[in-house]
Length: 382
Image 1 (spheres, rainbow, N blue to C red):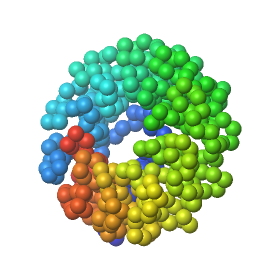
Image 2 (tube, helix red, strand yellow; image 1 turned 90 degrees about the vertical axis):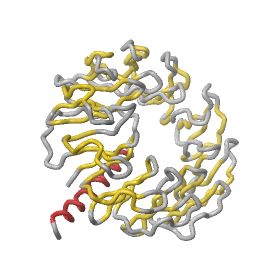
Image 3 (spheres, rainbow, N blue to C red; image 1 turned 30 degrees about the vertical axis):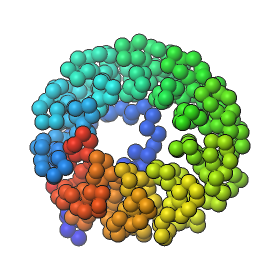
């Protein structure tokens, strides 16, 4: 086995691990960087959708473009560049994250976090041990062992009194107190009482809540709307949700009635009004009427992104089109979701991109790549 193939095998293992990490709760506060950065032999740069190098591979690490800027690292210092590669904010931070809602989170070398604007001006001083990105104008912060929220002026809108706090979504945020969960509004007023073992975000006007051993659905005023006492259930997607009776899952409407009988070991949204079912370890696609769309079963089916879904047969991956037909054979070592019309795939030669027809759009000439964001993708050269 040559060195390049060894590196690819190692890379696939790392990618699979990173996918598991990405699947964790995205509302969690970031892990603090330890600053133990070293120059890398294989540098990172950016390419366009033609595979042309737009920003040379000269960085030891980098992040995707967001709001016109990307965080990059040389040695042990982070800063920001524009989409031409010009440094817009000097590389002077221990760590830096993507711009969101006009501000970027940065960490200084004394391990404190704050926020800067696109001119590099400090808007919220770096005085926090932990702080998350802004969502709907508020950011979770930690003070001692508790959590609260600040606004974009650095004012504490919700005092740090909670064991856990999560990002705002649709005007409400999940909080934990005395090992129970509830939801608060932007003023810190408790909207959903903090008494539940589990509680979800407000999605399509409803909130999943688990009081004892079963789930119900509440409205944004805390009134019980669906009281069927499900063993488990999902958020609603376009008017439908997966719900579990004693042993099996089916599909319910917003009245709590089963529109697809509970016949499945697993049932979860595939997006695009399709659902992924599992029976005896094999997966299929069904529509909201329970009609099976795929012509055979698979060892894994992923959610749709831009009208395409990944599948796995044995150790190899392929793609399904929006009708559940096989767009490509299962011949990729690893695949990712489509972003901006292209998807990363792992070939024997390396990692490249395919288009939504399953055709190679950018040959696998890279040691590692990331998804496209704002027209550019991060790439690591051999």
